Length: 335
Length: 291
Image (cartoon, rainbow over all chains, first blue to last red):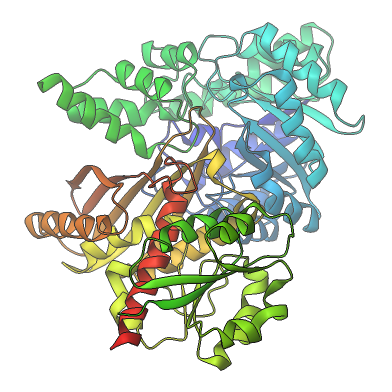
């Protein structure tokens, strides 16, 4: 049994510039619930407290979304993401008060120890607690395991290898998930979160499952940052063919993708040259639209900006540096 | 002029960097360094520079510290111990400069509100991100009202110690409060990002302000440049990288903060700006004591 965790209403906020309406949230979540999707994430794209100039102000607050969605669920549980340094433990308390039953605490893959307060509070609040190690391609499997153990010690019950840049190839996923599965406690679950920037979403998710992951993040029609996440409907179909149960109605998630998500898209979420560059250069997927806006404002190529962000070894959250980089590039071009 | 005698409590990275800076000050004479670990590298350095030291905490030597005529104390321990240190020192009229997040006294950001704090028995240095960004918020808010200010501090992984890591919310909460109370923004927000790149990145800070009404571009630009020059008096590596950029009511400034590399490496501008601001504060208090 593989648990599919639906991302369209959280990671999908990135390509929507965090403007999904409360009605859309409720409609999509209700349809996912009916289709048997067991776990759905709902927050700002950058997690609880992400509402900001830096990451974008959402159409509604996290609390408004959660209070609207949670009571409508019949079987699905709702999760919320948080990044220590952005969201605070007050935000965690709010989310649990809204009925969230799974909190996912995300840090860069080398900084697990900043999660102590948030993981501790999540456990104290009595909800399922996930440690989410982002940009996992930037460290070796051994280091990823070392960081995962830090989060496990803090109380995380599920540990994720998060391919935020969509950079990993299946072998890299196999190595990392194998390291986590073999090195963590037997009752700790292991998960994988992919981005489809190199079209590896499904292949990487399968590699993760075969290496012992039992939680996979996916998004209907792939709605997510960069070229999006692993498409839910495709992975469910593939897992069905392989005889691996997800408890999800394939036609149900196909219809969510086709009838609800695709019509919501501002532009097609696909592997265009910028999204491909994210995966190719190992850059945080959420930088995509910021780079495109800065490119337009300063008369530059968004691809060049993304490559420069990669060269500067930026990590998730450094959206603020994109315009700074663009200004410098524009000045250099003028000579 | 006779320098004012000072004690540094907490001989860790921050306390030791502060010591090396204070040794150059014409106004401040560090005479005591107090820790709790006998083998402390910081205490060894302090002894080398002729300071009296104790590894048994402030309680054990407070009477000697008072008898030696110390008038200023720097507390570079942790919020948990600060209140106790304050309570030991305040009855003797020793002014306390708090580098922990305890916030017993009012926030102090030297180029913004130092002059107004001369009579305070205890001042708090906010946070590294606060020292780096609040001057820029104040540079805008002294021109026209700021409805909202948001700062993003990005620091090298190696410059962030266990104190901050164990209580990351304290950084966001304290910095936000400083952005509002000292920076002058009606609503503030603080974000911290930790970057593990090698070689370590120099601290970067982005400051966004939303003004009430159209921003006065010329006045804000001048004010930002003036404020940068004020900070550079005690942190020479405080550099305006880009901006102010105006976009509707949004004003954005990009800063880089390189340290002097006294004890801490130059990339740790976030820590340097704390020790430099604390020393600057002490020097101002010392000037008042001389008068």
